[in-house]
Amino acid sequence: MSTLVVYASKHGATQGIAERIASKLGEAGQEAEARPVEAVDNLTGYDAFVVGSAVYAAHWQKEASAFVQRNRTVLASKPVWLFSSGPLGTELTDAKGRDLQVAAEPKEIAEFQGAIGPKDHRVFFGALDPGELGFSERAIRKLPAARTMLPEGDFRDWTEIDAWASAIADHLAE
Image (tube, rainbow, N blue to C red; front, side, top):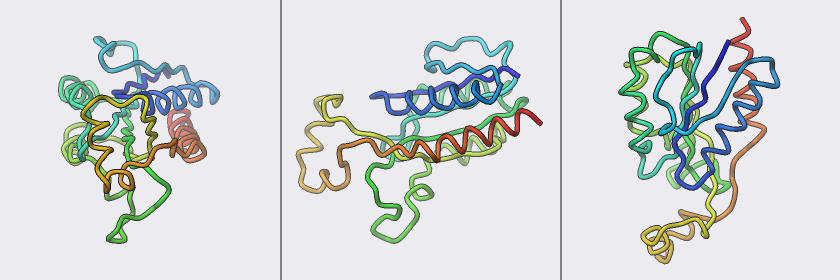
């Protein structure tokens, strides 16, 4: 089976996750490639899809959402997995005690579940490199509360990502 791992990444962390998933699928004997959403204009020839986006303010990036909307008929007819990259830090729960990976689910996911019926959706912790931030993001990080809400560092859990990719590969092999 040929799988396309398509992603929208603002600063590269989501791209890294997508490339890792494609690599793990390949190691498991599946044909897979990772491509940025803006470089995908034809879904012909793919048997399955993994679609991921960076999350900002509880939303997928516009180009990732548009990709799903534009291709919903094809995506609904094939096996699809979705992932989001976003929460930062090492805490697994928020201030209210909610699981951050559940609380961080983007608003679009419920709609996507109804429109394309993905096999799964996962939220993975992301990464923040201050050197990659734009002007407005740097200004926000200067606020006292933002430093604790937006800590710098790489918080991606590669073991968790690899396990998820392996589960996808197992499903595709069936």
